[in-house]
Length: 150
Image (cartoon, rainbow, N blue to C red):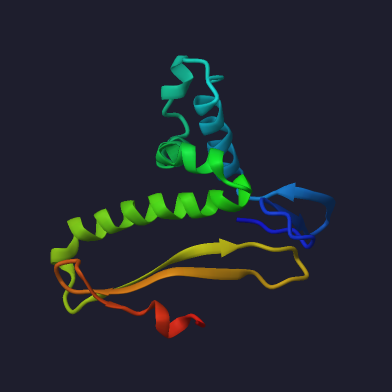
């Protein structure tokens, strides 16, 4: 997710460009796609099922379960990265579970939201999960408290 110097979520200053620009265009496009569906404005065409941009279609599919959540959000752009994180977390944990027999001693899985800022500011990472999983892909330790302030 991008965050402009003035705190606007979904925008970011870029080096060499005077314009404050959208950041994470894929998430913004997926959110707009979902809004057209939930608001009843989506036109049913073959392009909805177009697989020429597989990654974008995957992001759009991942966000579908969060339509009401985003519609009800006080700040849709601020809620968007959390909704995408939740879907990606489910997907990643499913992948880990399927391949867990290849885990020898354990696996540390860190998840969160990357916060991109302008060229004169450090970027940030907002950790939301940090789990140690056993060879069966089961969480054996929640390590998030060790890296976050309370």
